[in-house]
Length: 153
Image (cartoon, rainbow, N blue to C red; front, side, top):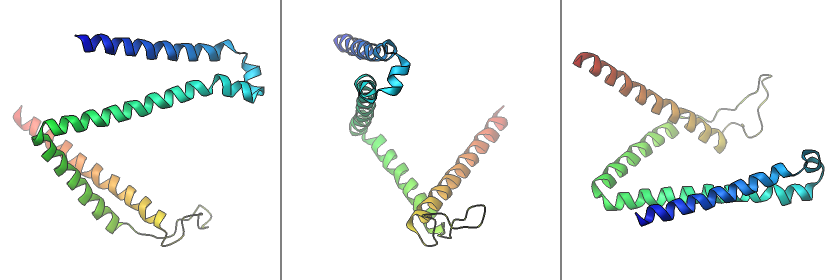
């Protein structure tokens, strides 16, 4: 119960700070904000820094809580490591299957960074192939589950 009160107070403080920074922006003249770079930095930068801080804090907290949960439950840790291993194998397969052909625009000119044999080409191709493979696997599981549901009913 005590942690709920602390959490509610923390949420209220974050909301108040965010509201204050947001209202500060609307109190300034929009035309003046467009013209005056120093005023922009003084008024808009704080809310950007605050939002960035909140984003990083949320990511760190989510990762730490996930790791804590995995440590507390070793059975889930095994499943998670197995899943990561399968994803790594699929990534390796996608990397081996991807090519490094030149990337051309509509006029047939090689795009900057798209030269044949470039590492960027290889990883972009890997990402595309990785997505296709994972999408295909997801589609197979979807069809399997659909057929299984139809058979049961």
